[in-house]
Image (tube, rainbow over all chains, first blue to last red):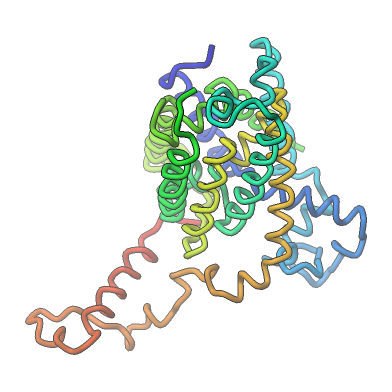
Length: 186
Length: 188
């Protein structure tokens, strides 16, 4: 049902290549910050303000949104920018692909088989672990300045030292963690 | 406008590809990390390899404009952050991109992953000033004293100067600095 690694690898490699040739390297995790910023700004309009003296034209009292001349603040104020629309389109593309191949099975939607084999059938346990996992994944990605897409795929293909360092850190922690957490096969 | 159209086309192609290679299935990611089924590992490595070879062939032959390349800086936080991401990657079976894509395919646990991710990103926004203060975000290459010629240490040919305490260590550090911070691909 899924593409074998040869076809899949070529397809995925082609997408990363086209992105870097035509626009810029693919990255996703920054847009979690931008979306947070949009929500935060909707509740409190003082979070992002116009600032003609800033490099981007926008500023924020939050040090992170305000860094690099307020470039994140600008993207919060104008969500119709390349990177944010890219992530929305990615979500749509994955949804379309899943529709065309007949969707994900009912059981699988709640949790993957390997979780069920190790921790049983209780949905909230899986949801809790996915939530906690999401928290540290994004905290780590922002600390590293990129995630699997931006650092590992885009970075390593450009032979960036940071991409290799990131991959080393991710697998050095991820492999033993996965071995410890998932003893039993699916 | 053109960039928005490109964002839609490339973004949709990326989401489609992620789903078709099986990356939206946390089962494959967990199996890869526990070194069981290496399908995704092979896919990712082939993708990086092919893209890299074509990219550098294109750059050398002048067919690809290097202006779109963007290399991120290396600092201690890259490894620490990578390790944190690795832990969550193993527990959840999702990374930021595949989590969002998986939520779109109807996986409910991916919605919880996304919610946790939004909170984690918010926590980073909140703690950024503190993190910056610890120095883990400082680029290795920005420590200018390694690069200043008058403050450099060199490995001596006879090895006599190396006997001085710490000299050898500092000389190695300066060499390491050169290797990491000069002769890197052009970044805009």
